[in-house]
Image (tube, rainbow, N blue to C red; front, side, top):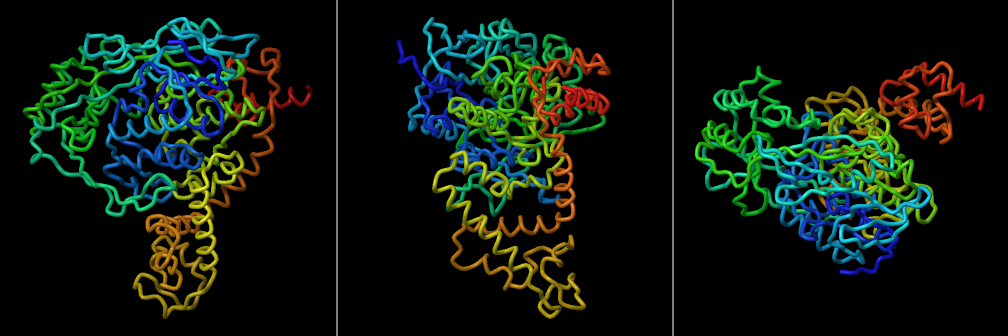
Length: 620
């Protein structure tokens, strides 16, 4: 079928990265073509039925703050919400939602359909380049579509191979074919690629599980949504269930390790160290007699249960035998076995911090093609690449997020400066300024940037304006003093009056311990939803408790700023720099950092190397 073949932006791939990219580009008034191998697979959740989690929940809030849609989809399709890490400081609290996969995917497709986005079912097999500038793409049918910007978001489809024991299937996802040809095109252009692996657990029939022998795991009684525009939030609280593996299960896996594609050497790609297969767990953590498995419904009323924690590439018969050694799963029947998938990715050091290629103008990469793992990481990259593709077309400065501004900024900086030897997954520990990057203060970190870039609807801006003003009011009220007589809590003992703000610096005192006159915003005709009002109080409390550390961070950031932002010319020759080690010459020449800050964070680059670079730049 012939299409109108002229667009402003072509998005290749309809996963989480592609969907966010297409939606934000359309929102910013550009003509968008979304090329996907299957229109029904747009927004598909190919792995776990959940959004958010440790550090990922913070990123979903950031996506929402930058005009993205993932948070809205999760809020409307969620069946259980929980804030993780509540026993730790608020800086690492992370929202997570169990979602109805079918509902989530339908919401993505419906929103795509309401925008003037041209969905083209097909496969991009070539790119049209003229003088190192992208001008279009070629479909497998031979049709050419033109656009001055292209965003490639191929997920695990590039030369994808599924492994189940010794069985191999050419596929990008179970039941869907791989994408072939684009890897060769990009490598012929000079791009450096590699091979990675990820996996997914088996899906089981709900009717084959003895639920009486499992433990229920509910969400929070007072749930917190992802999107700032979500009101009247009263979601379902459908439980997941947990079971424990045991020695019998472990022995079955140990005795069949050579049948696992990972252990037999069939898979050359590197898997995610922080999300290991069950074989890896049994092998690496042999001192543990059991591991927890989460039995998660894939959608409301689903007979299909996702066995979280049992990612595997063992033969199906071994998967069954090992699972049936668990009492609650004695009669388990699999609807689909777990499998590993191996795929091509391109080293993200070949990209600018805008996610545009350093070699081909107008060509952007986002998602698992950059070596990341996870829906949230992909969606964040898709959103930023879409925003920056529009900036590229309009000849505006790109939107660049710093490490102290957003988890998305940490991720992109890590990708373009550090070696990607395994699928990249976001953790709170990756952010050196995580005290500043709380999920509850996302609006204060990103509002001005988002507003100036025109990324927010008037409804969302109004919600955020109210939140910000509430925080200002609360901070102002906390400068007032309170007397010892006002305190009814026995753990708070005062000899004389002190400002409420001073009292809150004590770790054993919560803002909700204060007299009612400080908490009047919690009651009455608040313009904020109940969850939003409580959250702003908690965030102000955390801000006061962390104030000493936050002041130190701000001084560090100010001290680093001078060198951090010193730009490095694109034509600089590291090979000719006297005093640089051979390793430094190779790495700097490959990464080609945009500024000194990026150069400092490249793996293997020493302080001495940076000194040599700066001396040479001053001479130049």
